[in-house]
Length: 117
Image (spheres, rainbow, N blue to C red):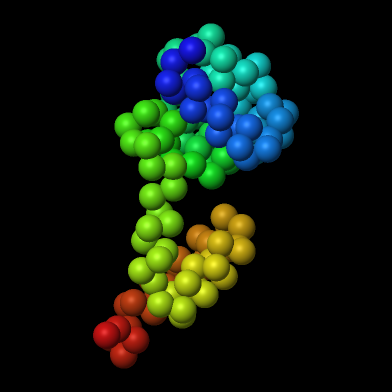
């Protein structure tokens, strides 16, 4: 088993997801996910690595074996003040459509000088 397949399997298990649940989250066929996790398939498209990483809450860099940091973004969160942490928490409660809409509104605010530092 390769390091990548070992990390994929470990991430799936740590996220407590079945292959069926992961297939539903990633839109990757269950059989393909099983082949990735067992090392049967070595060539995995990067978009699938990214989807697996997102669903299992690890980084694609970790799955690829490029870093041992599973969640480097947590280091950044520790540097945020309370208001910034709250904004991030609220943002993460939105679905993808809501997040896109919020980004559009932020872009609109940034077009007006009176709202910019």
